[in-house]
Image (tube, rainbow, N blue to C red; front, side, top):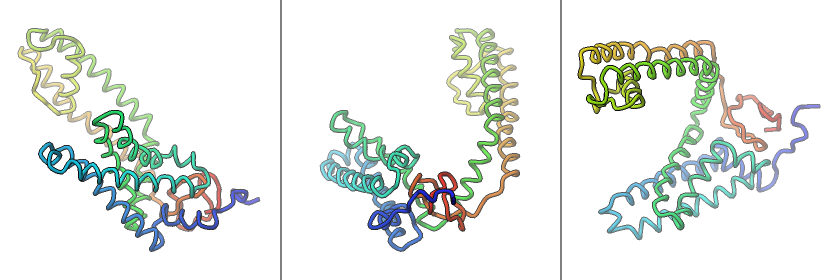
Length: 275
């Protein structure tokens, strides 16, 4: 039996809506995504302008109406996305499903908690769909390629971060003992904060050593920071050389909402459903 043969493909208007909303290989789907992205950008622009007090005082009512217009529009779109998939809960708990929900929730929460409407800037994440709209499917493949490299190096990165955490704890404690509260190092956590800022070469300058021994230790941490920052880059780069990007289509599985299928794929790479 062919894998996924028991998963019947969508038919009728649901199949048509799925093709328009989730794919960009047809003129209708491409037009829908272009209009969607413009709507997202305009809604975000309205929220940004609403945060400017002078503009809000003059055009607050108009911006409020625009925000509700786009929110209702995105709400209808979200409902249709749930309707035209085989497993609505699967989509609702996916990355884009959660982002789509978070994109409309703040406006409704605004009715109960003032100020939450500014969280709609999360909508900007939805613009990531532009890679499908512009038929830049190769970028999806490159994204999958990068994700595989990051997953393959996650243990090494975790070990690296644990080592850095241990190092900044020791350095922060040493600086606390050397400098003391009189020079701003009022506690070990404060010393750890300084070590993190210095080791990462950020250098806010809000706290700095004043004694000779403290400055000597700071110099060592600064030099050490340059070498440490190169480690995670080398880890990920080494894993990327072992991975090969695949040719990916814009096809989205109507059953489990999985993306990243090969161009010639006929069945979903995750659930085995017919594409």
